[in-house]
Amino acid sequence: MVEMTVELCLFRRLDDEYDEISDKLSTSLCLSDLSTWRSADLKGTHLKNKSLRRSLGYDNSSGRVTHRDEKILEALHAKNEREVELERSRSDAQLAWEEERMQLNHQKDLLENRRRQLLAHRIADAEEQQTLLKERQHRDEEVLRQHMQTKCQLKDTSWRHSSDQQQLRRDLALTEKRRRSLNRKLSQERLLSEFERQRESELTKHQHQRENQRMRASMMKDHKYFTDREKKRKENEEEVQQHERRLKGLERMSKKFNESLRNSISEKAAKSLRNQVAVANSRDYNMHMNAKERQRKFYKSKRNQQKMEEEIGDWHRSLKTRRQFLDSKAKLTASQMVEIKALNAREERRDREDRQQKTYRKLQEEAEQNCRDQKDAIKYKNTKMKLVQHHRDTVTGKVRSLAASSQRMREELRRRYGKDSFDKVVLETELRNKIGSGHISATKNKSTVILA
Image (cartoon, rainbow, N blue to C red; front, side, top):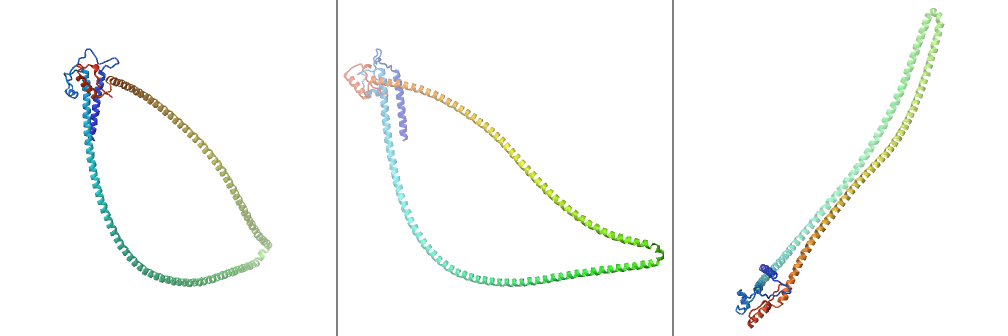
């Protein structure tokens, strides 16, 4: 493949050289409708290229050719030799490639056959190993199954034995549990009956103690009452006795001082009467004052109670008023807070709308700027594309004009040299030389130059 690539590159280079020579020849030729190969000052010469003479079978003594015809013949001969050499190298490369391809295919076939044989051997070995493995697994499974069956039987036997043991233990435990439960219930009942008896005895004892305490308290109260009564009676008797003793003393004193006090007895009697009246009056006054004090205290307590009730009512009213004030203040504060929040919300919404408007305007300006930039870029690209297209059209026009001129030149060459093959031209030249036409002018030269 590398040799074929080299040959193709060589073939392309030879074609390029041939096209270059043809272009040089075409530019050196003066082609027009009225131009011909005949010229008065053109003189014929012999062919100097030996290989060209050998290929044409040309004899220098038989005729002459012009310098331009010699150049054309040399170019055609060189092209023919290059084509023959290229065809030979191409056929050699093709044969070498075919031989190499056949060798590669043969090697591939050998390798494929070898691979298939190895694969068949491997498959057979794998199948044999798989069969042996399956047999070994089957034997192992059979041994394992028997072992598992024996193990299961042993486990079943041990499980039955353990189950019987567990059932026996459960029955014993249940019997023991029932016995303990029955004993616990009996003990609880005994304890409960004992507790009831103790509680009843304690209650009876407590009742007796309370009765004894009550009786003792009543007896102590009666004893105290009788003791106090006897004490008061004794005190009263002592007071009466003292009074009697004082009276007796007074009587003795009065008798003793009868004479001295006779004049003032009436006064003293009146004084004692006055004192008795004063004592009675003071006692009545004290009793009246005590009653008035009690009444005053009662009225005072009543007034205090009324005042307290009024204060409580005032406190309730003030509390109610305070609550109403606080409720109204809370409502007012809540309404003010709601208004403040609404105002703040409106301000925030206004600020947010302003920011959104600014952002929207900024985005709109950026979008417009981007649109303008894109339009400018598109305009620049369109202008650049137009310039490139114009340059491309100009180059294409030049190339097309050059191709048209080259085509016209090729058509002119085809028209002037005809469509005969090179061998036919050589044969015609040999025949003309054999006929003895002598000097071959350019007007009778019908060599073909195919530049297509």
